Amino acid sequence: MMTVITIAMLLSTILAAVSFWLPLITPDQEKLSPYECGFDPLGSARLPFSMRFFLVAILFLLFDLEIALLLPLPWGDQLPNPETTFFWATLVLILLTLGLVYEWIQGGLEWAE
Image 1: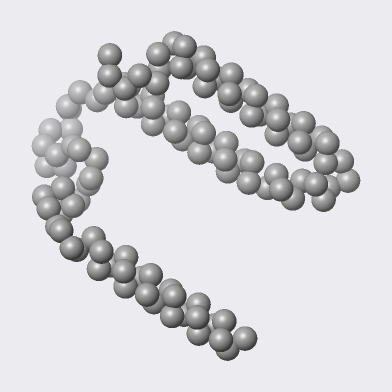
Image 2: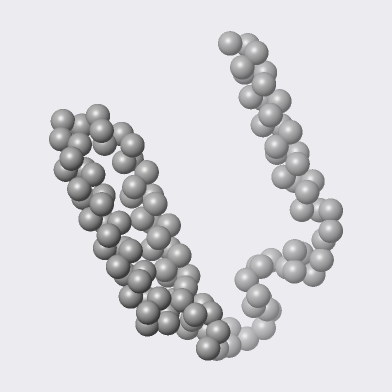
């Protein structure tokens, strides 16, 4: 047990040190800015915002949420009726896939016009 705790502590310390050290290797203007979003944080807040970027970001959040909803699925086979769980999961996946196909056909995933 002591070996496992020692390895976990050592690995955590190494990963924390690397995560603090690695970004400092080549600091540039973008990495030193408070926001890495491409906007000037000290400039005007009334700049036009790309609607395409907003739509792609919303789609990313939607599919990220879908993965979070499907994470408990492997434990669904331990329920009394696993078929019901898998049916609803399949229905959600089909619905999201149809939505993705619709967005693709409509050109909603095109970054540039």
